[in-house]
Image 1 (spheres, helix red, strand yellow):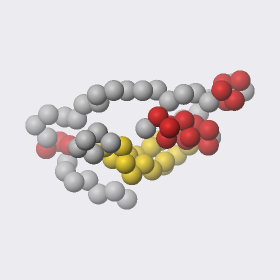
Image 2: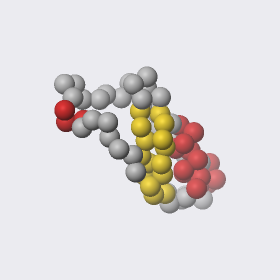
Image 3: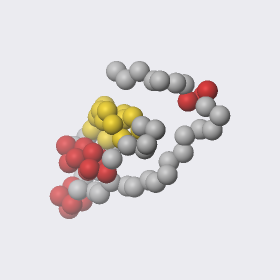
Image 4: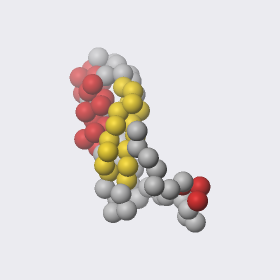
Length: 71
């Protein structure tokens, strides 16, 4: 379990995403009309790098791969 270095409620300005990119929907799942989701926890460093990626739930491995590739 990751331990927070601070409580986001204590910040003067809340964190803001600089970019939001949707994962590529796996083509094999599109063809099969399979829907799903992935729940992920990760850390964003001061430089904006994504680290400590942890998948907490996923309906299909292909969705996990797509999310990780996007992060």
